[in-house]
Image 1 (cartoon, rainbow, N blue to C red):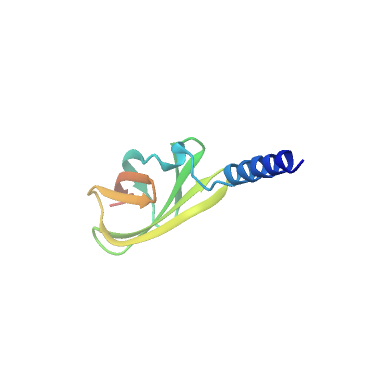
Image 2: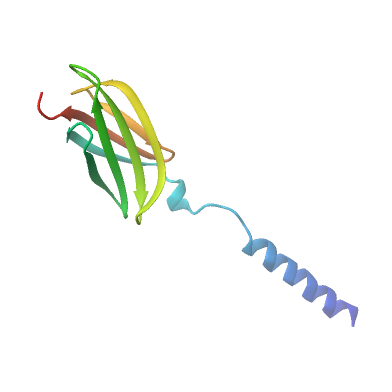
Amino acid sequence: MRSPALLLGAALAAALWSGCSNQSSPESATPKTVSLGTVELSSGQASRHDLGGGTVCVLTARSLGADSLELIAVLEKSGRRLASTRAGPITADHPFNISFGNTHVELTPHMSGR
């Protein structure tokens, strides 16, 4: 009777091992690049941009001078903050890239009122 118990134990161990795998899904591992084009920003005002798949990039700029700004970017999904980054000084009206792991956002920030 040891043989069936041993087989059952081995099957249970294999099921538990495969069920507890920490491998990420292919979807989450695939890099995603979104181009927002020229983005109109007002100093201190948050600007929300849909990246698709329920993901949103929230951009907030602060003027640092004539053509210079600081940019705070927050990545959200389903209302939950996933990541954030701060860059500055960056040059207004020049292409800029933001990376949140596998999510890359391309934009040209333009400050309103210039």
